[in-house]
Image 1: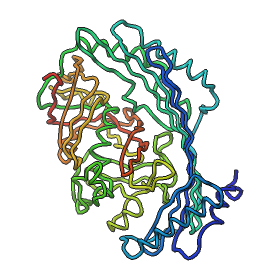
Image 2 (image 1 turned 90 degrees about the vertical axis):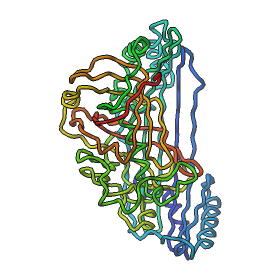
Image 3 (image 1 turned 180 degrees about the vertical axis):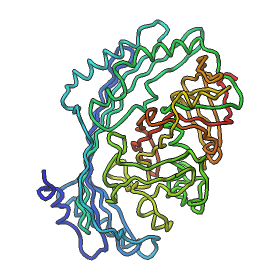
Length: 480
């Protein structure tokens, strides 16, 4: 349907109020389905459809929000009236003014090769039953899980300065996990720790090799039962892309959120060790560290053309050659801080105001093959797949544990070890980055459970990374 013929967009535009400085309205509908097979039994199916409109009104430096699921003209006008009241009440005490960027129009739709709706629920359940059954191939496997999580988000954004934006995103998250048990020892192995996720349709499963994953997951879980505990000591650490996903997320992504730097997250998830005066001068990492905000990557979890305030999304460096250059801040935070940011003002559902969020936050590849990365390591460990994480309230000190480790000796992967963990400090850890994989080693992954804000907003984000090597890291086994 052409934008000019869109009935809803036209109705929203026709209801734009007069006597205010700026108005925007965003209609958002989320449709989701989650199916799971565990230990040969199909869990209750979870399906949901949720939608409504968020109205934002500006009067001077005051602004107000109101949301409604009543899409009649009466329901929408009531929301507009409520938002207008709050905009007048806050006028004169705000720190920022109404958006000044000219309204932009456009579209974005996830690339989908195999639509979710092209398969029946019966077909999807048969697929999961098949692959879950492959996980039950050994008596030492005591718990099995295979699942598919699908979500489609459709939105229409209009504003009083002429913006008309249509976007749709389709996400698929395949899951697979086993629990192995023998002689009092329990080990878990999973399909990338739920980070094998992306935009698209059922082709996302092919992208990550879901159909072939079960035998390897079982084999590695059984192997961990007889593996020695991870060695303890300060050594070289190589992180696989699926573990880099969490490392990027917790110790780069959250610390660089501009509203957090400005103090907005104190009550919920802590502040940040990063301060505004660090940008342009602070060396966040070694010269090998290049990090981009890139919502233009086809098929990555948080790709889009415009954020939820109508700002056009573009690729930007946050860290370049180790130097911190730009925060993760949307238009309002940029005004407050007097800094350039990115188009990352996002909301998780229709009745939440957008806030500064990660989108696709990626470590750019270097020029080392995997063999190059491990080739000169005399004593180190290669870690895969996050299993637990902890970070302090300034996003600085952290500790992560992984599902699987492999000792590196004299440039070779040798003994598989269980219960590997490591700890560090964000502001020094990245300065010890000593090797970054080349484009052939890059994996585009994502997360579906990033929480932030009060009330809480859980949102989907993307992370891409090659394997990376770090020097002088404190590594230990959970049984130490």
